[in-house]
Image 1: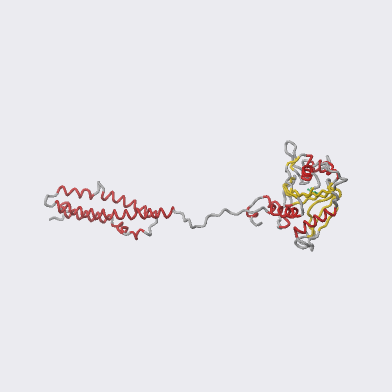
Image 2 (image 1 turned 90 degrees about the vertical axis):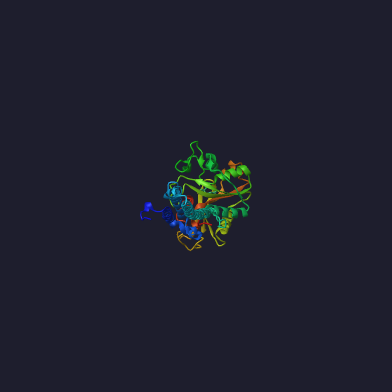
Length: 367
Ligand code: DAH
């Protein structure tokens, strides 16, 4: 016997190499217990799996030191062969069994982690689409419509692009009136006007339905205006028209007053001031007592106690005549008011343009 390693007896040599082989896998050994894997996340487990496969190739593969050691079996004496062969087999079986176990554990742990990560928890609440709601102008328009429908009025839908005839001529607006100018009204390139008031619907409605008639017509109107906190080139109006035999200014006052009471409360007071509109004679503008301070004076009514709301009057005989209605038999009243302005007042908006910018953070506040 000699201490020289190269001269070691074959059995010792196998034992030495076997020990080195087992040491190479030592750091993986604890993963033969599945519990040791439980805490590993997917990334760590995959990395260990890869390392183990590398070590397996380098230590047990064809070019490994262990592969050379195994060749000793062929070189030893026939007497030594069974002993050496059995030892090699024992060591290899032990190491391979360990590595196989670890590989199987890793594989199933990795599969479990993947499934967990990809799985959907069907018991989680779903993502609900956010509920929309009506625009504040729509809310107000529908309240106005409800009141007039209850008073026996129909709702008319007008058109937003008009001819000169409907926008001006039929409404008794003279040829040279400034409203007809391009400074006030938007025109399309082929000469149509974007309606500058909902009064146009009076004409359409009487032409189509004849008289007697009771209708309101809410809708958009357009005027050349520079936008500022109280002006916008597009805004909303509601037009009202009532034509029948024997209609007087008393009906106008009664109707507008009742509307405003239903809108702002039973103690609302209405006031009419003489005014001028080409399509009414006589004409009046109407105000109502401030809904906030009840007439005492506040910021909303600019300390006057009154809020100006719209124009009105008795339908001009020329307007009746142009739609073929005899002014000696029929008479009527009409009125118009701005919805946006009313909306700004009621919700105390300091800038009317907010209503048209469609910023959800603003619109969300009105339910
Ligand atoms: N059209 C008018 C405007 O836009 C409002 C108006 C006044 C409408 C008197 C009417 C009315 O029906 O009779 O300023």
